[in-house]
Length: 99
Image 1: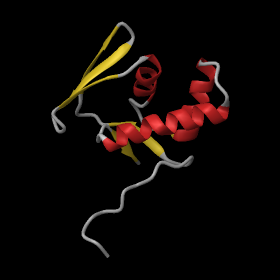
Image 2: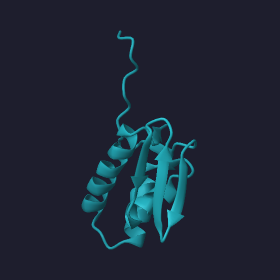
Image 3: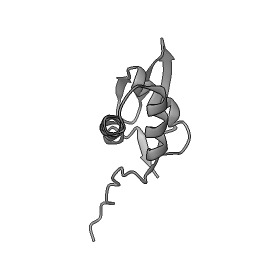
Image 4: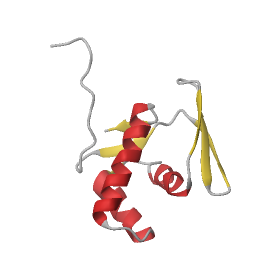
């Protein structure tokens, strides 16, 4: 058993939520944020900003994909692939909590 905790992977059964201690604002429908922990500034386009908005509260990955498919004209496979890639980037930057 190592001294480091195993990193959680995002699966269809995962529940997710954005980290609560980030400074962010919406400008013209797009989120800009500052991570004090990372000392980095981030900008999200409209779909990423919508995902960020939906993750204000705990939400299942499947439900997130369903909601995005209802709002955007995209196939389930494409939505799942693109959403997973975006969420992995958020998780790598410590902007997302996998519950």
